[in-house]
Length: 180
Image (cartoon, rainbow, N blue to C red; front, side, top):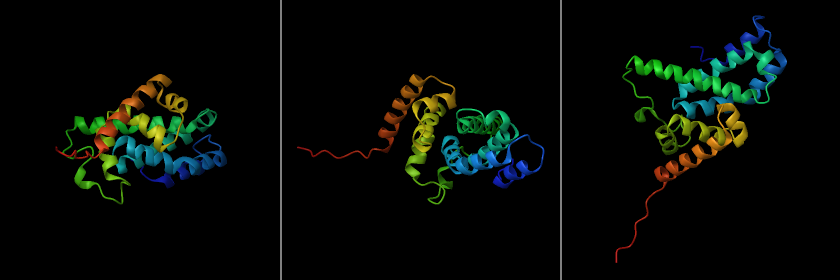
Protein backbone atom coordinates (compact mmCIF):
# COMPACT_ATOMS: atom_id res chain seq x y z
CA UNK A 1 0.00 0.00 0.00
CA UNK A 2 1.17 3.47 -0.75
CA UNK A 3 -0.19 5.36 2.26
CA UNK A 4 2.06 8.30 1.50
CA UNK A 5 0.85 11.60 0.09
CA UNK A 6 4.32 12.35 -1.27
CA UNK A 7 4.06 9.34 -3.60
CA UNK A 8 1.18 11.04 -5.40
CA UNK A 9 3.18 14.19 -5.95
CA UNK A 10 6.25 12.17 -6.96
CA UNK A 11 4.12 10.45 -9.61
CA UNK A 12 3.26 13.80 -11.16
CA UNK A 13 6.95 14.57 -11.51
CA UNK A 14 8.05 11.16 -12.78
CA UNK A 15 6.94 11.65 -16.36
CA UNK A 16 5.01 8.35 -16.20
CA UNK A 17 1.69 10.12 -16.47
CA UNK A 18 -0.09 12.33 -18.94
CA UNK A 19 -1.42 14.45 -16.08
CA UNK A 20 -1.19 18.17 -16.23
CA UNK A 21 1.01 18.69 -13.18
CA UNK A 22 -0.17 22.18 -12.20
CA UNK A 23 -3.89 21.41 -12.43
CA UNK A 24 -3.57 18.07 -10.65
CA UNK A 25 -1.45 19.66 -7.92
CA UNK A 26 -4.10 22.33 -7.39
CA UNK A 27 -6.85 19.68 -7.26
CA UNK A 28 -4.79 17.54 -4.87
CA UNK A 29 -4.06 20.44 -2.53
CA UNK A 30 -7.69 21.51 -2.51
CA UNK A 31 -9.25 18.09 -1.85
CA UNK A 32 -6.70 15.79 -0.20
CA UNK A 33 -7.54 16.57 3.43
CA UNK A 34 -11.32 16.49 3.10
CA UNK A 35 -11.35 13.29 1.03
CA UNK A 36 -8.93 11.55 3.40
CA UNK A 37 -11.14 12.50 6.35
CA UNK A 38 -14.29 11.39 4.51
CA UNK A 39 -12.74 8.05 3.52
CA UNK A 40 -11.59 7.54 7.09
CA UNK A 41 -15.15 7.90 8.33
CA UNK A 42 -16.60 6.04 5.36
CA UNK A 43 -14.33 3.03 5.84
CA UNK A 44 -14.17 3.20 9.63
CA UNK A 45 -10.38 3.04 9.87
CA UNK A 46 -7.97 6.00 9.88
CA UNK A 47 -5.06 4.12 8.31
CA UNK A 48 -7.22 2.49 5.67
CA UNK A 49 -8.85 5.86 4.91
CA UNK A 50 -5.44 7.47 4.35
CA UNK A 51 -4.28 4.56 2.20
CA UNK A 52 -7.52 4.61 0.18
CA UNK A 53 -7.14 8.34 -0.43
CA UNK A 54 -3.54 7.87 -1.59
CA UNK A 55 -4.49 5.04 -3.92
CA UNK A 56 -7.42 7.01 -5.35
CA UNK A 57 -5.32 10.13 -5.90
CA UNK A 58 -2.64 8.08 -7.65
CA UNK A 59 -5.27 6.63 -9.98
CA UNK A 60 -6.68 10.10 -10.57
CA UNK A 61 -3.23 11.43 -11.40
CA UNK A 62 -2.59 8.58 -13.83
CA UNK A 63 -5.91 9.33 -15.54
CA UNK A 64 -5.95 13.10 -15.02
CA UNK A 65 -6.55 13.82 -18.71
CA UNK A 66 -9.96 12.17 -18.27
CA UNK A 67 -10.67 12.65 -14.56
CA UNK A 68 -9.74 16.34 -14.70
CA UNK A 69 -12.51 16.95 -17.24
CA UNK A 70 -15.27 15.49 -15.06
CA UNK A 71 -17.80 17.83 -13.45
CA UNK A 72 -16.88 16.46 -10.01
CA UNK A 73 -13.42 14.89 -10.01
CA UNK A 74 -13.54 14.80 -6.19
CA UNK A 75 -16.57 12.52 -6.45
CA UNK A 76 -14.63 10.20 -8.73
CA UNK A 77 -11.70 10.11 -6.29
CA UNK A 78 -14.04 9.48 -3.34
CA UNK A 79 -15.78 6.60 -5.10
CA UNK A 80 -12.48 5.04 -6.24
CA UNK A 81 -11.17 5.33 -2.67
CA UNK A 82 -14.30 3.69 -1.25
CA UNK A 83 -14.10 0.85 -3.76
CA UNK A 84 -10.41 0.29 -3.06
CA UNK A 85 -10.93 0.40 0.70
CA UNK A 86 -13.85 -1.99 0.58
CA UNK A 87 -11.78 -4.42 -1.45
CA UNK A 88 -9.17 -4.35 1.29
CA UNK A 89 -11.86 -4.95 3.90
CA UNK A 90 -13.26 -7.89 1.94
CA UNK A 91 -9.76 -9.39 1.72
CA UNK A 92 -9.36 -8.96 5.46
CA UNK A 93 -12.65 -10.75 6.13
CA UNK A 94 -11.74 -13.59 3.78
CA UNK A 95 -8.42 -13.95 5.54
CA UNK A 96 -10.32 -13.98 8.85
CA UNK A 97 -8.22 -11.20 10.29
CA UNK A 98 -8.38 -11.26 14.08
CA UNK A 99 -8.59 -7.50 14.46
CA UNK A 100 -12.02 -5.90 14.32
CA UNK A 101 -12.94 -3.52 11.51
CA UNK A 102 -13.25 -0.72 14.04
CA UNK A 103 -11.70 -1.88 17.30
CA UNK A 104 -13.20 0.29 19.99
CA UNK A 105 -10.09 -0.05 22.18
CA UNK A 106 -7.93 1.42 19.41
CA UNK A 107 -9.92 4.64 19.10
CA UNK A 108 -8.24 7.64 20.61
CA UNK A 109 -9.44 11.19 20.86
CA UNK A 110 -6.48 12.26 18.72
CA UNK A 111 -7.67 10.05 15.85
CA UNK A 112 -11.43 10.60 15.95
CA UNK A 113 -12.88 14.03 16.60
CA UNK A 114 -15.97 12.46 18.21
CA UNK A 115 -15.71 8.90 19.47
CA UNK A 116 -19.47 8.44 19.91
CA UNK A 117 -20.10 9.66 16.37
CA UNK A 118 -17.39 7.36 14.98
CA UNK A 119 -18.96 4.39 16.74
CA UNK A 120 -22.45 5.33 15.57
CA UNK A 121 -21.20 5.72 11.99
CA UNK A 122 -19.50 2.33 12.19
CA UNK A 123 -22.85 0.77 13.09
CA UNK A 124 -24.49 2.10 9.91
CA UNK A 125 -24.56 0.02 6.75
CA UNK A 126 -22.01 0.97 4.09
CA UNK A 127 -24.73 2.52 1.91
CA UNK A 128 -26.08 4.68 4.73
CA UNK A 129 -22.62 5.69 5.97
CA UNK A 130 -21.59 6.70 2.43
CA UNK A 131 -24.39 9.24 2.05
CA UNK A 132 -23.90 10.67 5.55
CA UNK A 133 -20.18 11.17 4.95
CA UNK A 134 -20.71 12.70 1.51
CA UNK A 135 -23.50 15.03 2.63
CA UNK A 136 -22.14 16.18 5.99
CA UNK A 137 -18.39 15.61 6.05
CA UNK A 138 -17.81 16.61 2.43
CA UNK A 139 -20.78 19.02 2.35
CA UNK A 140 -21.90 17.77 -1.07
CA UNK A 141 -25.37 18.39 -2.43
CA UNK A 142 -27.82 15.53 -2.92
CA UNK A 143 -27.08 15.63 -6.65
CA UNK A 144 -23.30 15.55 -6.20
CA UNK A 145 -23.60 12.72 -3.69
CA UNK A 146 -25.83 10.78 -6.09
CA UNK A 147 -23.38 11.26 -8.95
CA UNK A 148 -20.37 10.25 -6.86
CA UNK A 149 -22.07 7.12 -5.50
CA UNK A 150 -23.78 6.31 -8.82
CA UNK A 151 -27.28 6.24 -7.31
CA UNK A 152 -30.45 8.25 -7.85
CA UNK A 153 -30.97 11.48 -5.87
CA UNK A 154 -34.12 9.96 -4.33
CA UNK A 155 -32.03 7.04 -3.08
CA UNK A 156 -29.62 9.50 -1.46
CA UNK A 157 -32.53 11.20 0.33
CA UNK A 158 -34.03 7.90 1.45
CA UNK A 159 -30.74 6.50 2.74
CA UNK A 160 -29.91 9.78 4.42
CA UNK A 161 -33.25 9.88 6.20
CA UNK A 162 -32.89 6.33 7.49
CA UNK A 163 -29.26 6.89 8.49
CA UNK A 164 -30.10 10.08 10.39
CA UNK A 165 -32.90 8.27 12.23
CA UNK A 166 -30.44 5.56 13.25
CA UNK A 167 -27.81 8.09 14.30
CA UNK A 168 -30.38 10.09 16.27
CA UNK A 169 -31.46 6.96 18.13
CA UNK A 170 -27.86 5.95 18.81
CA UNK A 171 -26.60 9.38 19.85
CA UNK A 172 -29.59 10.63 21.85
CA UNK A 173 -29.26 10.36 25.59
CA UNK A 174 -32.50 9.06 27.07
CA UNK A 175 -34.08 11.47 29.51
CA UNK A 176 -35.56 10.22 32.71
CA UNK A 177 -39.22 10.84 33.18
CA UNK A 178 -40.45 11.64 36.65
CA UNK A 179 -42.42 8.87 38.21
CA UNK A 180 -45.60 9.83 39.58
